[in-house]
Length: 377
Image 1 (spheres, rainbow, N blue to C red):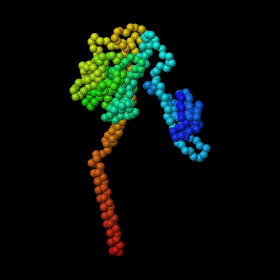
Image 2: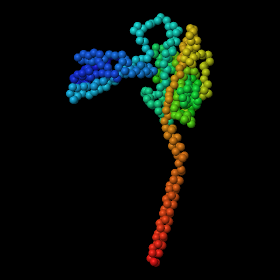
Image 3: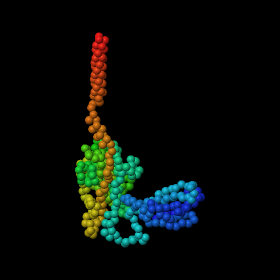
């Protein structure tokens, strides 16, 4: 990491002192300086610089700190903190001389496929970017984007074969709810209170977006939801059919419609039983993401390419609001009927008033009797 800082730091013609500039949490000092600039040169993780890893990047962060010092009790400039971030692709060719083989061995092909990066992420309401919060209210929608990073691979198209919702990260746990099944049928959209659907058209072949209305499991002890999906990357030349589709249910027409392809490829969704069209065969990719015969070199039938399937998990998604509803319902069940409360208070006031009158009358009569006795004497 090389950071060059102009000594005319604030562009006001007043040069800063190099000793007032430091880099990173460890306050590393400049490595060199000239009349016009101060230079820091250090390893990416030197000076205690933190590193963060995302699905696409290695991110190294640091800060340039300017703390003006003075030999007198005053200063005439402000301190400053300038954040510095370096992004490096996680998957890239770092060789200075790229190897260009005249043929591609089978093992190389497998290695490339294994490096495909599949991802599920939450998107904002307008689909403009990733959503920062995992907290939802009932009535909101989970805007989900599935994607595959193709990198140097041949052109691919992404399909979401299935998605299941559970209360734990384990997709086999119970209770569970099938959101998408039958190789791309968004079954949740068939419910009367749901408007779930795929976004059409696609923004690009290696991405597929769909919206699912937020929900909670009945009598759930917790408000967490996990969504696990089987994502499949197929060659971009794949023709849409009953096994390669993304279908949404249209309540207005009581029919299914695909993101691409003809409507008849979705007809199997109603029964939830979709199979390969007769006379066709799927490529040699398996549901585990490895071609059958892994480790064996075998010829690929003409016109067929491999498919890669991966499982991606989204969650936990936190559904807010249900706990407060339960609290209010339990609280109201323990309270007396509203009309009983003022009646009970009225009775208490009446009884207390009558008792007070009786006591006052008794005291008055006793006092009068005593006075009469004294007067007769």
